[in-house]
Image (cartoon, rainbow, N blue to C red; front, side, top):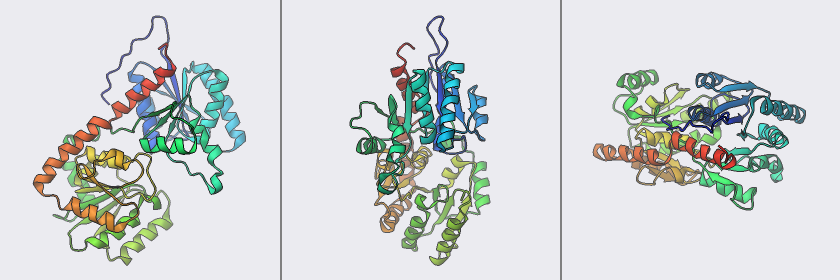
Length: 391
């Protein structure tokens, strides 16, 4: 990140302390946003504290000077949640916490009770639509994410969802899109060697356009929808790479493999599992696909693909229409419609070399102007300052 912090504090005052709470620090969008915000807080001269059950990303917190507190915050057991409330009250007292920011439902309830008891502002980030369950029985459980003094919606789509189901007005809502870290996702920083290494690992055929769908192997990410769409492109040359771990979903992985065989795509589709160099992965792709069957609250793939100068194909629901410009930085297709997805892919694959040369800087500029990590963090800091006017 390239933030431009103002680290000055009123004379004699300690820097504000922001406590973020979430279930775990494993890989994922919520976790990444937490790390990015902790990094920004430290850069601005504030103090970042994060409470979670822990995980491999704790090391990233420690590298930026933030503090981690280990608590069983992934638990939905009411007794554990009450104990978490008391533990978070102690954290607020001992760390001099100025503001609490909750990012997931179970820990948000504990954090809400603790923040209210200690008289500190409470902020939530509404990261998803959250399943309402049969007869909307989970709505009461979900509503904690709309109970903040400020509620951060990660897209206009989520703002509309909150207003439809949880709040009568948007007075407390602040829309702050997720951001792309251009320090990492920068085409100029990806060496040919990194691209060659990945191409060899995946055994990509020479000279064939690459269609890539990044996303863990889970049904709603739309791998099977994409496979169905590919059957409408048999007249074209292409190689499709499905990038993402099954995370133990062996049955779904087997179903995807069976579908590849049934559709006669065995020589055209590669299951690439997890990738630890996504910038290089985007660079070896000719078109990046988001095929989610359910509306995405934001959709980092669409933003990251454009940031790397690649045409992006995404469904016309959720936040995708906010992230890409149809026909200019990508193509939108009718959700869950393989024929519509195939038409969008055909458009992307038909771009000439000159058209791609014009396309890339336009897509990159669009993301740099609207969806950067710096922009996200600065807007979140502005929300904190709304609730801490003395800072």
